[in-house]
Length: 476
Ligand code: AMP
Ligand code: ZN
Image (cartoon, rainbow, N blue to C red):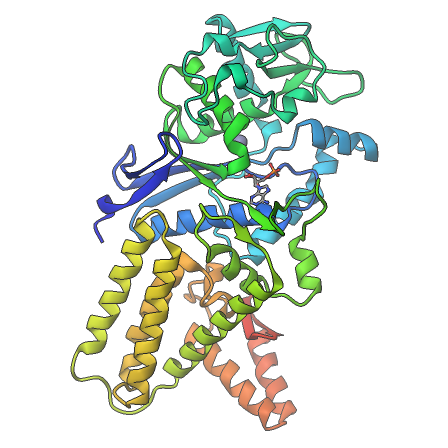
């Protein structure tokens, strides 16, 4: 598909618009990452999976993507947590960063190019604050620095918030500092006794939350970049404030396309720590849910629709995956003479074209999955009619692998999605054949043989893991 036909719903302007990156063929994406003061819940993970689907889809559509995801490792919550445990900030946040990376890996998220930490970018934040002070967009008060909202005539352009009605964000309200105007938000917070702090021209302190993202996005993607994402709760005040800071300091547009994902909800309410209605990935694993089913469920609803989390929804995801697994299995075992009509290749091309045009239409995942399942249905019928044979396996599997570059679920439990290209040592086809032979041995209760196959693979660096979904493999 022509990548110029890609459209996204831009929150800035609230319209579906053609997507034109700054540099042809290359896209810079900034995604607000987690505040690493606890384990992410699956609501947070929905947002991160939306961003993964977005970046994967852009790559599928032919763009080179650079994704940056920050880690908010200094803010009120991380500081409070470190204080409560009586440890240094980085000691407190380290296990949550590790857990977050493990969650993403378990969910087959393609890693961002960089996961910068706020604490590594204090100098960049101070530089922006310095420019804002110099140009009158900020003022100092009592060791803290504030953004002067009244100086920014464009304030509110993303969220549509009217300045007179602007409610002070939660993170601002927490702070007990003197401001000119209650709507002003903090850029630099003077240190309270005992808090971690960094030296600055305004005295020891730490950055406000919003300035973190203005600095880290510019450091890696430049002052103007293509796409900025987050959950809808980030839209105001966080993203509105990022725009205010960056555009006032730099004098150039900040972000061209803003994409916001809707919340995961439970019984009509946002899943959140404060409501206590949340599950972490670990909670679900303990209940026997597979990361693969969760990934499927969370990506299968359009990102701008609320997703109501239920266990019935997970069961439906599992059934959809079983259909795909059965199909892959069937295709891998097609025997006999092949399609001579050329219809299969036409059908494969049609699948890829429909899939691309669905994803290019503001990530229309329902249409993309519908195209995939229609393909599965039609190829299954052709197999029933004995129209396909051994030589047709590869074109069908290649189409599924291509589609799975965007979805990341079809081959998730086979190891292909772990970024392993099969170029070293034992090849993928051989591994799959060995897994099939081991399964046959186990079915025949020939456990000596099945153990021999597993040990032989292990000796060659391939580890097998049995799960309810079948056997997955990894290279050591
Ligand atoms: P936080 O760690 O609180 O900064 O949140 C990380 C990301 O998760 C942000 O992009 C939020 O918008 C997003 N988020 C928080 N709660 C939910 C939810 N219930 N559903 C979807 N995304 C959420
Ligand atoms: Zn952010």
